[in-house]
Length: 108
Image 1: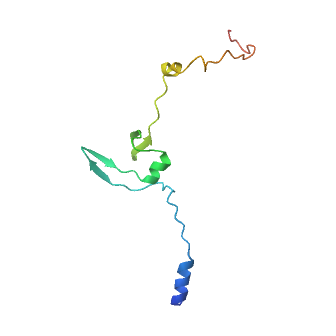
Image 2 (image 1 turned 30 degrees about the horizontal axis):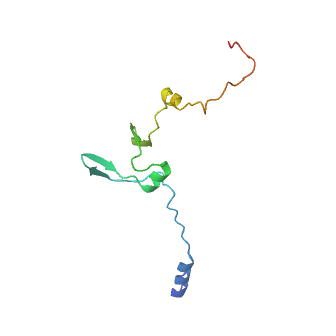
């Protein structure tokens, strides 16, 4: 390999452009388990937290798999019928909707 003169090497280095996208999330990353009070904790990398839409105090679901520990965002609880009906008012209550004549063996 031919060597560049010192001035040529410096010029070549100045012309290089490096693009580093810190928002890309690697599919895996190593972390360290640390003591936190009477428990153990793992710090979540910022890129993972942003990708999952988590924040301080966010609920997560932990499950053991054959491969290890799986951490996923917790699903919000299903709404209860009582809570949904409590939101119905005269103002947002709509009238009946005509769906046409019966097509099968419906009893109207």
